[in-house]
Image 1 (tube, rainbow, N blue to C red):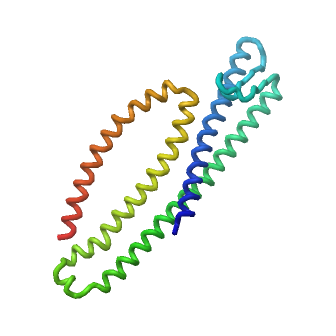
Image 2: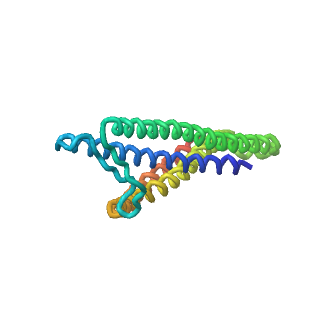
Length: 212
């Protein structure tokens, strides 16, 4: 019943990734422009620069700066763009967190209500056979574990979206370096899996101990 909020949260996540990618691109163009102008001034050419937006494969357009006024306009324009991206990113991050947190809390509220409704209608014989600690553990501790798992699942989905956006952009910029980084991922995954297995084993022992 909450699929609309989930879809909206994923869209917000995509927009956050887009803002971060454009922010990095805008900062790169600004730094390249200032570096080129500084080099030309030191070499005696004056305030002059031609900045290519894009790369050799996809050349979008050139920005030509000649003189103090155009240099100031370039700095102000990209400063405004970068500031606007930061504001937009903050808005999208807030929307993403709000939507995902609301879905998580609504799902948990429904689950707790159903568990409570189920427990109060159980026969008395059930409570004679099952330890009170075990029942309380199912109601409280297990639901908390589900909450953590749900939050982790949301984080995984957001991480996948960010990874697709950033890796795609990295391949577009420099595919050789990106490929090298991708080769290192399996090693990192092995280390994460090892510690996750240890954590689950410890968590299981804690759960069994609390049920006693």
